[in-house]
Image (cartoon, rainbow, N blue to C red; front, side):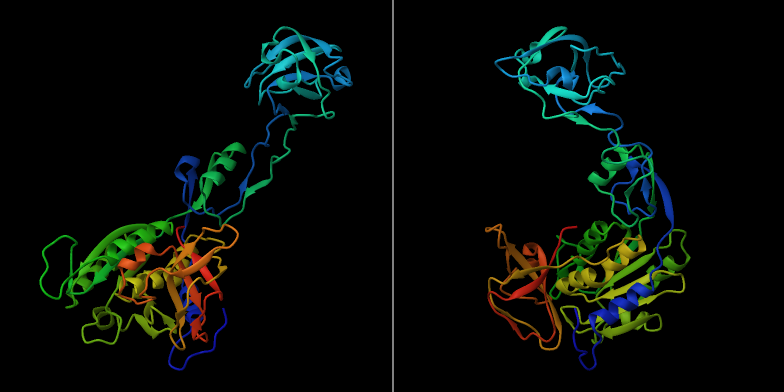
Length: 420
């Protein structure tokens, strides 16, 4: 997304480029399949075995010689002698002479002498035909009918999965089917989350005037886990700086150093901005041409820990995480794609956008017409950075370029679907 540079503000791309330039992928580990779910593959997964492993039956029926049953029909069935019964898992390879067949179940190895499968439905007796005879009432479509050929999907030595993909259930099942017992995956980023502000108290505790429940820690922890990383610490600190200094010292000297520190709050232009006062020499404090999320801080501590200073308002924190932190977490894991692909959907309602800043609007998707999804603001409050309750209704961000002053119903809008 290309936009003109607003005086005094960095573009989103400038800020993100700085972030990604500071990221070096983490070390790798070798994981058994049962321990690799959700991890990022760092080396290609190469098949040890083929898929299918051998010629096998695609149907419950009878393995036959095609020449024996050519011309079979309901009026003139072909009668074959059934000389074997082959369940899935059998190692038998019975010889089939002309005029003979073997009853076979789905997945069982096809006898070397057979070149077609007749499904039970195409015989007179169906499943009841066992050792004895079978009456074939329909000619198979051709040689090889209903036979899954060995290595038709994957051959030994083929690359099953490329490096850089996340290992979900489908990917792990493919690796297992190709007889790959272990995968080389990325270590998960270790993340510490710090919510700043003397006004914050734990949810459910009695509050004094001016205090609010602390929600950003839970928000960011969930987003971190969804991004494939691990939260190793969550802190809530006030605005005097001593608690934040303690956290930073532990990050620098403790045995379990975090790869990433995420703070929320304390990065704006107010009088009690603890992140700004304590980390002025370590971080770059910027104003980015986006709404919400204009104030941003970023840098790397001498210990190597990457630091994100996010705004404190919940919607600002969520959007800032999506735009800057999530791509960094994925890059640390060696992901091929670090940005969500955008859909382009028509707006079902009109809304205004901030002048000179790219808007990330918490949005809802109307899927009632599967051929024409539409997007609308999740709440009547638009992209107000304080509207934490509205985040519960958001399933996407509608992204509107800085030069667009308003969105009209029917306008096409770029949309980032959330949830993964």
